[in-house]
Amino acid sequence: MPLYECNEHQFVENIRRLLESKEKFLVNRKMTLHDDAKYGPATMPDYEFKRYEIICTRKSVNSTVYAKVPFIDTFHHNRMYEEGENLHSSSALRFPRMSVPYYRVEYSVNVWGGTYFFPFDALFNPEVVIEKKKNGKRFGKEGVLIHVLRYNPPEERVLAINLPKEVMVFDVKQMVRVIDHSSNF
Amino acid sequence: MEDIYNTDLITQHTTNFYTRKTKKVFVQEKRGEQKLKSISVLVPFEKVQSSLSEIGFLLDDTVTIVADGKFWTKMLYSRDNETISVSEEIGDVYPKDPIITICGSKMTISKVVKSIGG
Image (cartoon, rainbow over all chains, first blue to last red; front, side, top):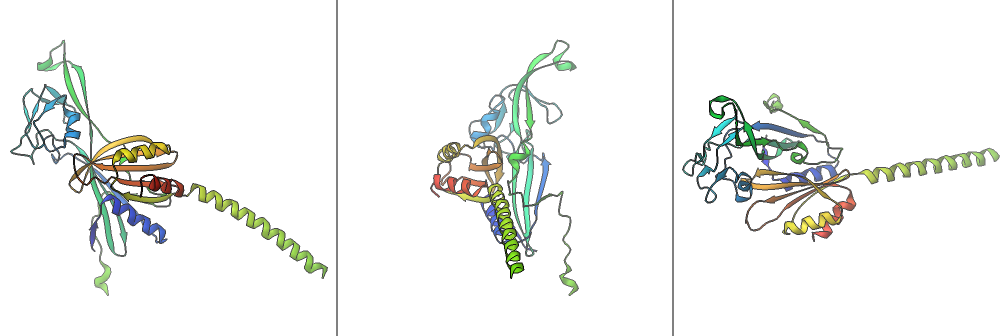
């Protein structure tokens, strides 16, 4: 079964053509959470990196990123980063120490034995706040003010490809296997 | 003769009744009908944004996505039950051609296409 990758424009236009042809079809959607260090602060474009500038610094894209202030990453079990700590090294761009979680979204449609799919990753939105943290050896009973990094998942409505009501979208976990009946003939 | 006349009359009335009713339903369906369209044009995002706000679409939400190995900002605009998403590549890249996906009425689609010079 051939598998064809489309971009957003191609995928939507293909759906429109199918709708106009009155062809019956089903759109599948797979949405999975990943935190596999695929995205780190060094490789982000400046526009996206600006959202992290309160807590980290870098010279330019693909330069080493350092923590500007001590902060806690709540998404990764309250991991603590020290001031000046290397968060994403320019010599190890594929292995960031500070990883950005994301949703892997895959839309696909099967027609005439072929699968046409549009995949994309949606990054979680960073939110940096200052909070008073108490307890533990580090903060003591009085507590201290510290920067806290939170990752908020993007809303489903902004991840969805908005399709007319007559298009049925099925959520799937994974396509496990393809049964090829052609060998029976 | 009289019977035939009467039958015709009844048929005529019945036909008219059904025609009117069907037309009404058809018009209602047409009003709520949603169409799909995706456009990719070499138009600055600012122009797209102003065109959308002119026809009453408001920014609902944004997300950063990575597709085709590039970073994009995906913006969702909505008006009643119609939605338009605009995906624009992040950074100083050339050519910059935002992808506009419209799920709305035929009129909305033609308005957007006209306003951005598509």
